Image (cartoon, rainbow, N blue to C red):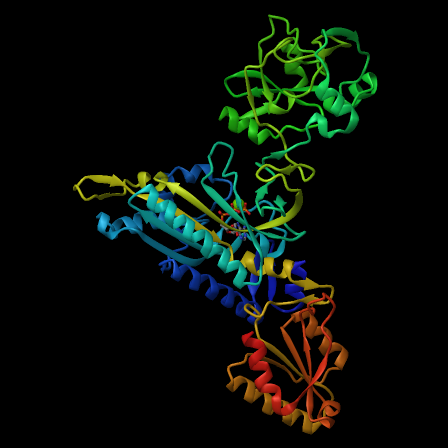
Length: 563
Ligand code: ATP
Ligand code: MG
């Protein structure tokens, strides 16, 4: 949607997939977005700099990212065979740069930022300016003597980021990011809700918490929440377990059908191959799904679902695997999701073809090596913090902040002298906002079927001044109003083309400036202009056009723009 509206409206023009020209209108919006970002970064003492795009390959080798980011790097070389990387990010440049100037604890903390073009070979560059191969980013880097100082600064940046989005007319949700499978909570994403988003996030309207579905935690229904059956189960006494014939398919649904029970009464065991650790069965309640990222985090290793061949080779019977009666010769361990604890007399496969075991109870009939949270949280769950209802929404990641610790400063041996004249490591944070993505995000969040609805703060112009017909008097008056508004500091886009009212109004809606002022022979008869706001009125209906007396127009426009 952003690509279509921005292109039709004359803001951008595609050069190739993920590569765009910014035209005069688009550049004005980008400039306004940049100035909002600048202002907020300056408020947290960021100092603006400008680093090169062309990076010597050597500095990328030094941090190991020449290899680890191989897939996204654009590389180039000149005639002398010296190799370069087109910067996808600037940690490799900024860290040695700051090291040159900062020698003592007295020089810290320091934060520098730039608004620069980045290059990334994105495999899926097809969402307009949301995912470019060449795109704009504000990237700030902060340097600290202690981890506590980094933490405090990081918290200030959270507020600065929220301010940026709010000033761009957007509501942002700050969410803990997964930061890759093996990392802990040291990064946050700022998400804007729109159906065009690539991410799915879960929002609790009661406490306001937002989470990425990839790592979300939440409360699932317990047996007693499942009506009479569940209530009965919660009171049920454990019965002796019993093998039963089970001619069925391998799915949970097939088990439900055969035993005439709901999915939550079945124990589901999914087998994974854990790097260097062999086979592990994750046991979870049959109605729930496993979040594999959580499994990877638990083992801090790569995992993959065991293939049917692998299961067979290990002596396991697909569709009938479970933690009870496992033949001693099979090498597998079991870890339980917490959800299996509260079901009495659960049903599982018996590790033999067409045999199930009913009335299985943990502790009495089987054990697992450990319990952990492996559950894939969905919108049907309740908030883990306050119990409120969750809803699943699509969102765009419009910014990202990280505590980098000493990863990059260690790579270039960047230390400072502390008060005791000892060399100590420097802690670093980085803070990114995709400014070109933000332009696209605003369009995704602020449009209707007729075009863009720019928030006043980032609109390329405040007023769309339109003349209709070729009335000489109207043109004269409009010329004069243009001069007066401009003198009053109002940014006016003046459409004095001879096209029809239909064409001009259609373009005006598409371009989406906050205020449309029309002057024609008819409005002059009442010594007024026609005033129409682009944004819907507070009840969500399109704003009505109204007449404003000529003598009041400048005053009213100044008031409108300031509000
Ligand atoms: P994504 O998960 O969307 O690929 P990322 O984690 O790679 O983002 P960072 O490297 O943290 O993003 O970059 C900081 C910000 O730059 C992001 O929050 C996003 O707003 C923006 N950004 C990242 N990649 C692109 C891109 N290809 N096109 C436009 N903006 C981007
Ligand atoms: Mg990326």
